[in-house]
Structure formats: structure tokens, C-alpha cells
Image 1 (cartoon, one colour):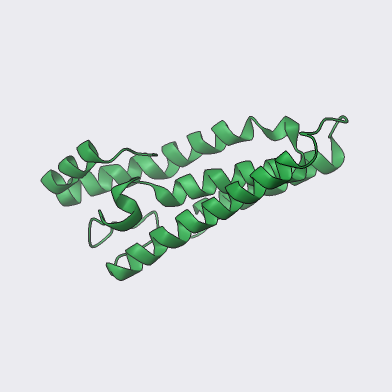
Image 2 (tube, one colour; image 1 turned 45 degrees about the vertical axis):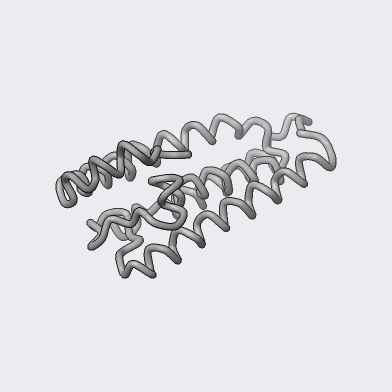
Length: 149
């Protein structure tokens, strides 16, 4: 079951939910023209860039990107020097971008809900595994690098 419990699948479900809401239950609401499309492109592009930078750094350090496995190394370099969770941050940005792009106004509450799911299902258990595996090194990293930004 853990093979199916992955953040990209949760993201896909939320994006499809936002699309369906915009398509079938828009109630005539929208964000307006121009600025929402521009901002959605920035958010989606920024989210994809964060994810790519994080995956690159984890591959460079030869450690897993799978959220249910304990990494072999505590990655603190590259984008991980700015955020302990750049991939999850990227996922949230991508969702926000698609909500804007679809004009899915009623789906805006999905952003904090998705963030909460990521924290409870993935981030907290990952941090607990890393705390046990890397002890003092994790403690120092946790003190100097914020969870999100």
C-alpha cells in the first residue's frame, strides 16, 4: 500500500479535483484574466524547478527520494540548505498554480488541506525517521533550516 501512498498521487488527485470543480461547479466564479494565468505559470514552473533541484541534489548524494524510506544520507546542501522539504513545497506551489489556471476558486481551501495532508502523512513521519537515524546531525539541521521556507 505504501507504493500507492505517494505525494505525487495526492497532488494528482487534488489537481483533478480542482479541474472537476472548475469544469462542473464553477458557479460563474473566476480569478480574472491575465494576472491569474501569469501567476499560475510562475507557481507551476517554480514548483517544478524546486522539485527538480531537490531530486538532483538527492541523486547527487546517492540517497532515496521515496518518502517512506529512510535516506542513506542527510542532504543539507543545494536547495536543502533553504528548505527541509523543497519537494513538498514544490507540490503545494504546483497545486496553487493549477487552481489559478483552472479558475477553480472554490478549490482554494484545497491548498491548506493538501499542505496538512503532506505534513501529517509524510513530513512528520519522515522527520521522525531522520531524527532517529541521524540524531545530532539532524538536530543541527533542524535548528538552522526551516521546514518549508
